[in-house]
Length: 311
Image (tube, rainbow, N blue to C red; front, side, top):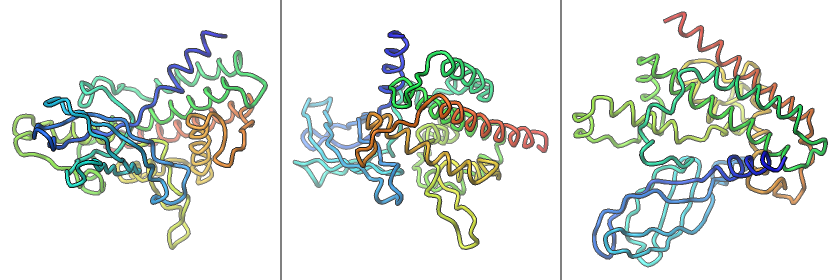
């Protein structure tokens, strides 16, 4: 049991770093500074996007003169702002925050599986076995919380990989997606990069998609007609493929609740922002959460298969 627990602590609970790629001219020596730095994760438990912004401290070191600059950072769902304390007039260009990825993998296509559905199903079976044989009866146990967090992590990976592979398979939909997606519309593209690599734009879009927050399922607000307003993952799938992320609105609401619970598990050690210890993660809850994720994956996969048939 000790090895399993250690593995989950190392590979799951401590696996996530939130980072932003930054660019600036060193205010001391004028050298270009391009690097990836740690930033605070936005608070996705907040109802309004303006309340999701997290504040923190950052350090940026210049490779040219070795000077270290202290700064303040504000990280939101789709933006990141940094101000150097000693040089507030220095402009710091920041990418939106996302999970960390090694620089050599930013444009690496090999890390996206050809069949995200099969990968999820394999992980589903492994998690179900783990729940049945290793999960505790105590719904507040660390191991149970880590299993729950991993259910959401595997689902997020499926959403990301399926979105990218689907757009690869449907180039016209990729062009339509790029025309409608606000983040991609704001991306700066250099003509020299396009001329040197005809696939540069597609790779740039895929990097953008890999950096997104696949536990962002919206606020649950409705439009004027009373229909749920698609946001986050649901919106991206609607724009890209024209179908709903879940077969029923209740499942999308469940995902929003799961995302908030996962945040408390990973970042608050199983305690809510109101200092309430979470004790609901018993075996029955874990099985239900896994079954919900599995049903959503089946729904998305069926929709993707129909898109292939109608091409």
